[in-house]
Structure formats: structure tokens, C-alpha cells
Length: 106
Image 1: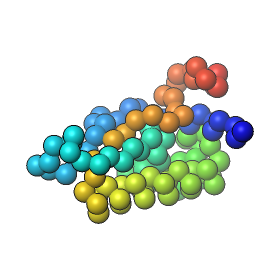
Image 2: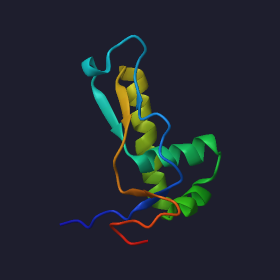
Image 3: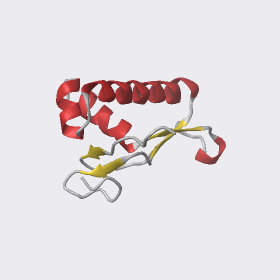
Image 4: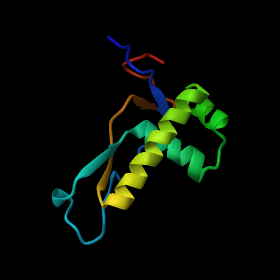
């Protein structure tokens, strides 16, 4: 049985947790779920412009792990845009910076 992933640190919850094509009801769309750590990776790398090493330090994960997370996040965003799906942001192994994680106690 594989071990659980380490918890990742995020700075804030997303302001909006669902994005969808304009003019279409969300209930009629296929959804893609992006985890909170994938959202944080996009925020740090693409919005803040941090290098992977710097972003990984902020999330308290290794650089290779950050690379896998950001690659997955980019793939999900591309799929939502190209295929016209709803992108829902929730879940994953993440906790807010400054708060103690109930699962890993860090």
C-alpha cells in the first residue's frame, strides 16, 4: 500500500472555487477537479513568477514534487479550456500556512 502524500502548504484558499464556460449551466458540464496544492503551484509559478525551487520551498515540498504538481495543474487547465469543461478547485493534501495540519502535525 503506498504511503499518503506529504501535506503541502498553501497561502490562501481560492477566491472562486469553480470556473466554467460562459453561458452554460455547470450541472450540464463535465468537471475537472484541481486540488488546492495544484492551485497554489499555479499561483506561485505563473502569477508570482517564482522558480520551481523557490515555489517548492514555500510549499515545503521537494522541487521534483513541485514539478509533478505544476505539470498536473497545467494539464487540467488546458483540458478545461480546450474541452469546455468546468474546473473545480478543492481537496488534496494541503493546509494553510501558519496553521497546524491536523493530519501531519506540521
